[in-house]
Image (cartoon, rainbow, N blue to C red; front, side, top):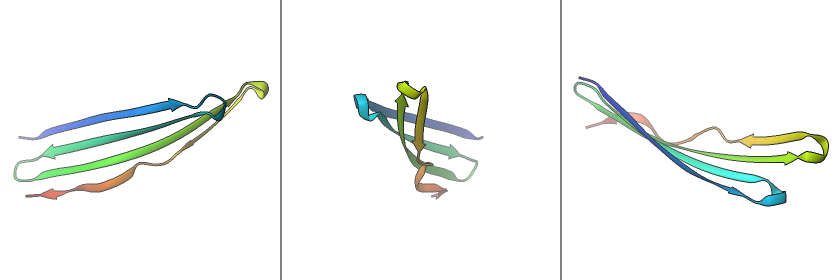
Length: 73
């Protein structure tokens, strides 16, 4: 039997004229027949809208892995 689950949560903050930032975390776990794989990732994003020139800039950091999904047990 195979079981997989993931839990994701995050928070964002609007800094008015400075733009907005957010961070989120994902935890995943997979149970296979004789092994369990677990891991977490964290991601950071920044975004700023320039209304005067009808443009937007966004920076994102690829997920930072706390642990790769690895064999446990």
